[in-house]
Length: 342
Ligand code: NAD
Ligand code: TYD
Image: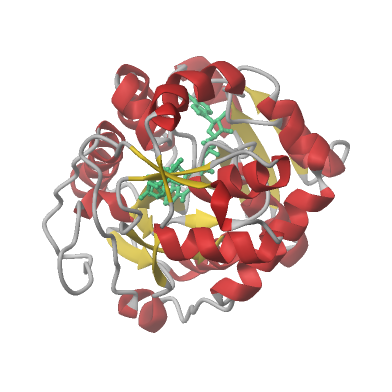
């Protein structure tokens, strides 16, 4: 198997490449990544020089870059995306470009060679929208409510149309919120861990009662390898863990794992259109991919905290750059008007 992994320098892409390099010794990997603010080539520096690894800096919206990168590849795993809901509220255009148009460019190139075995489109449980009761199953109606989730829904619908129209062997996975090493510190878990280390406030949106189904990133990676090996073309698989927690519960787990005083927690003005709850039914992945998650939240959060503790240069260099402006813009007024935890 010769994989093209787009977005391989980002959070899940990095963990996936590492997982494949150690668990599938006969596979080789080409990474195509634009290296946006969220991508770090040095995440994968251990593999530079390996015959099984190649890095190409390029944009999935650029047909020439995509053609060069896909040459000789038998499968594509598309992680490349704009991924942060808050940034999508601020600037939806870049999301539509990469998360929809970029998928089209990849599919057009993929379909030129019908010997390729799988086009794995990495999607998200956010395409279901906010779920009041029960768990979303793959046949449920999509109801994306942020520019991020709407763009991801557009990308996967387009991918599925290439299966129906052209017979492209598309497999789609919809994963829940991931956490683990190498996550850019604008997302809840790494932001709160690193703020705790720095003695900065932990800004919880709204009442902190929004619920997510937290999945340790390595468990996501094992599901994706199973989807490549056992996934049926034209099929969608939910990937999650059933570890449903409120943001407040996640925050308290981080306070405990970092030994931080709860007085740093602040309730701030909510995100616009903030989805209250995501929860997925993973029976199809269990039955058809023979996959199950292995890492409980206590273990996963301890591993994650340890990684950020052991790699301060990784996140400190990010937080001292463009991130500072971003943080000021997103949080400074809201933190001035925030409330302490009772
Ligand atoms: P990330 O933001 O950490 O990484 C995205 C990567 O894509 C970066 O390396 C970036 O440089 C690259 N990229 C962005 N635009 C590109 C372009 N036009 N061309 C080439 N490369 C480009 O994201 P992540 O959290 O690792 O998410 C990876 C994928 O998984 C995304 O498709 C996301 O929608 C999906 N997903 C993420 C989660 C989660 O909790 N993080 C959950 C479910 C699904
Ligand atoms: P996030 O990590 O941005 O992922 P997503 O929006 O894709 O679920 O946010 C996870 C949850 O944490 C979400 O309910 C929003 C909330 N949140 C905060 O309360 N404070 C923050 O500073 C951030 C970034 C997120």
